[in-house]
Amino acid sequence: MKRSCWVAILTDVHLWVPVVVLILGTALLMTLR
Amino acid sequence: MSQSVIAARSTISLHKLGVFCGLSAAVWLGSAEAPTKLVNAGFSPFIISMGMVMGAFVARWTVPTLLKGTGFLFNDLREKPHLIVWALLAGMLWAVANTLTIFGVRNVGLAIAFPLWNTNSLVGLFWGCLLFKELRGSKAKNWAKVVGGAAAIVSGAAVLAVATAQQNAGTPGKAATGIIAALGAGVLLGTMYIPYRKAYISGMNPLSFVTIFTFGELGTVTLLTAINCGGASQVLVQLHLARTMLFWPFVGGFCWVIGDLFQQYAAKYIGIGRGIPLSNTNQLWGLAWGALVFGEFVGLAMGGRLLILAGSTIMIAGALSISMAEPPPSEMENWDAAMHRECDRYELDRENVAAVVGGNDPLADNKHPRRWWEVLIMLAATGIFVWLAVGTRTQHLHLNFPWMMVLVVGTIVPLGLCGTLLWRRTRFS
Image 1 (cartoon, rainbow over the protein chains, first blue to last red):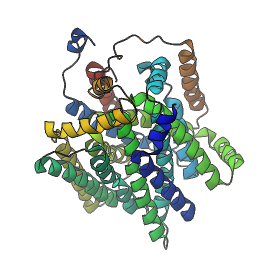
Image 2 (cartoon, chains in turn brown, orange; image 1 turned 180 degrees about the vertical axis):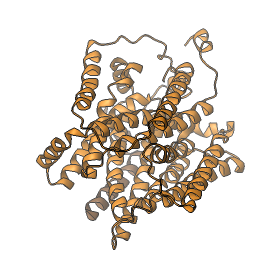
Image 3 (cartoon, chains in turn yellow, blue; image 1 turned 135 degrees about the vertical axis):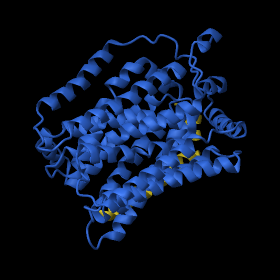
Image 4 (cartoon, rainbow over the protein chains, first blue to last red; image 1 turned 90 degrees about the horizontal axis):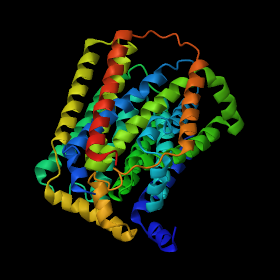
């Protein structure tokens, strides 16, 4: 992929919303087990 | 694409097609629960879950490979490589959410946990509206139909769960943990639909998305199972011990892949706000299998039976409400705006993406040469199922065969009907 594509990905709110939820979910899972 | 080719296609509206896909998804996702009910030998839920995910991973390379070959798949991924990130992310979100549901059920029982994680359709509705402009520009009547319908489906799920899960009261003293786990699963599953919708307003094919999704799903589930079962070697030992029952979770995984493909098409053609609540009526089908085939509710009191009737009616009413909420042109303008945002951001061809999003993929009618390795992959995938079936030990369960036949036919009929509709209208684009 081109560098501009990576920049577009990394600055996309559609990426960070699921990523943050995934991190929080994983943290929750690790706390509960 | 030439006008004659378009004219040869079915003219069914995309809304109707999406509704049929959502309902077919519910049938197959509900049926995916049935094979796991055959496992009653006290295996770890993590191993059963992993067996199902492995089954889904392998099943992707059976029937779905007949629809679109690897040439089409690679071409699709090459055109939109950025979406690989989102497909992997969606698989990872599903894996973490599914593990959280296991903790939820273990600690508070299915009656409380299920409705909590079933709120995922409301979370998906929220993200669809906020990030993809779904429902924006629609009249209050349409909002009421969709939001009310989704809320009715969640409420119906709550009533059904209370009525059917009285036998599983959960672990005393761990209620708060279980509730947090189930709610967390709901948020994760609802957020998983962001990648779904993003892929489809960019013109990706659901088969391409599901392929990458299964990699993210299997990788994360393997990691989580290893952590929860005490290491990779322990997972291998437990899988070996579970060899005689693994066929059933694999069959569940097969049903799940078919159901998820229909869910993906629903998300593509009617959005996540409408599509996901419809596919979440899968609980009705899981219930039908449990009640009619496995005789799970033989001793259920009249009050419980009435609750089941009420919950099912509420759920069906919710699905009907959403089915009748076709997006008006003013809402479609907002859908287009969301699509143009993707095209501009990732330098996609607007005209081409608009055609694919509208179910008219210009390349769908072209002949894509099949590769020799596709036959090998399909044989290997089918061989794994056959190998597992041969070594499966008979499960001593009482089954109602006449009802099982009815439900098997009831599962296959939507596959044939909706598959035909998808082919005639979109050529599986």
